[in-house]
Image (cartoon, rainbow over all chains, first blue to last red; front, side):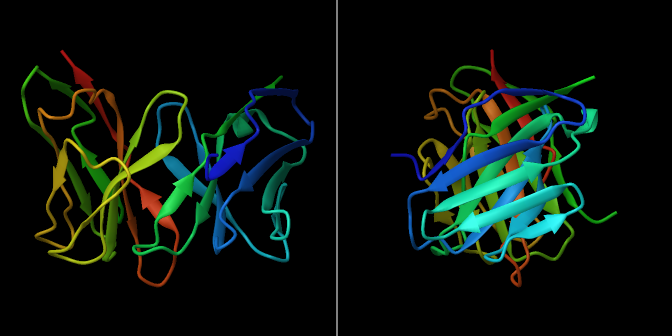
Length: 111
Length: 112
């Protein structure tokens, strides 16, 4: 079983739609959680950290369910510029603060 | 500008050749990391270093080597022992006070 599993995608949605990505992690000792965004042929960039109480940043909302080992990202009012691959990332706080990356879910927002 | 730089952007390797990818950061970060990304796949950790003159193997270290002689620099050598080196190589760094990693723009390595 993979340590971090994401919706396989791809997702194709119209502008203005609401889209949700799901992610599960296998190690219950996982301590920190992130969503990164990666544009085509570019480096990943931090979108937001995910906190236990859930957190929101503009049109983006992240949720964490530790009991179910589940993380989600909700994007409201999708923009064309939201088209990218979204990576779910988990830190198990092993030596060196190593991050484990999901394979990513590709989103295309269409006009 | 503060940040992480990687060079070259594209690198071509001939059969049996060792090549070195550069990673430099001026963020004063203690920890640095090297990842490999293959098409349609997630990032896999090659090597990481928490402090100068110290580094540890990641999940796919075979065929790679690193050094950390300076805080700012963490070069990765892809040796001839790495039989399938074609990939996108990403360097990242992290401040000691957070767990967030910041990435350089990457180097695409192609085998001729």
